[in-house]
Picture 1 (cartoon, one colour):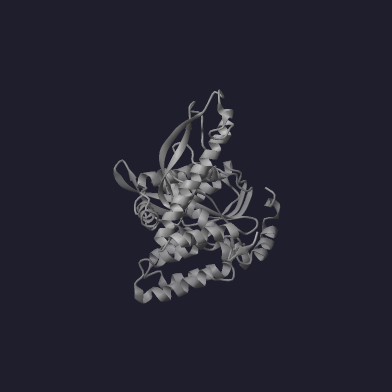
Picture 2: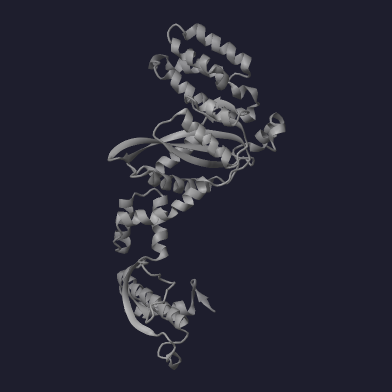
Length: 407
């Protein structure tokens, strides 16, 4: 069929008819609204014909045991606004329409738009106002919540999906949200585990919600990972959270724990006055940027001689956590630059914050799970490539963890 400017001949004829009867875009919208409603009604009539086995007014319907029984009125919301349609009924009450099902008051397009807006971080109030402004459709926040609740089974499936047997690197980190509980506002931590798989691609392995971070909570996360198929983790990178190292090694005894150097630097400089901060940071950099562990220990002692009397608490923390802070020195540069900081998961959480910035308080844990899941879905669309220089890092992993590649 001949096409002009993307339209075939039938579509061009419809465009000409609209031009003949419309003067403004509002007139076009009104006409399309009527056309939409009329098309839905014709489709419902066709479904009724198929249901009964004969066309309207056909003698084939005589003594057939069922017949048409007038129409019911229904208002549906669509991209064209609210439309009233006539829904045919049969005398036996057996007709189950498909194009607009019983009790359905919205087209799938509206629901998809609600889900898309929710995924982009819009609040329920913003979605309500947007639908009203654009489509003239009144949809309450409660209804929007029920629509978005439809993804909860999908959220549960994602959270419990099987995982790969081996992850060379995983990152732990938490993000705080305000939530309602017993008519009070409480702070809850949503803990995320970001894994780097054998292909070098980032993957959120799951999210867990807790009011209190504790060793038992971390152990439950690790147990969940194991129950979902993870047999081995080479290196776990995280902040120095009490009990996390022990929880990881209780479930994955071979896993090395690398504490985040960036977090350690921030903690070290927290109470250093501005006038000394630049010099302290420069001397701390000599420790973590050393060529090897021996040089790092030498730089640490130099730091002690220079700064310990003035800031004795800095190296107390470094000494206490030295074994976990220096794991990255065991590996070549290709692996070191990936594991010395938890920046990968922190960067992910910064993106989550962009999606959730309009939601000051979440009413339930499920509302948190929904928005986190939809944020992950949006963010992970960009995770199509391996982390930088993964080929080189993989080659080193295959040497250092040769006996654990097929866990």
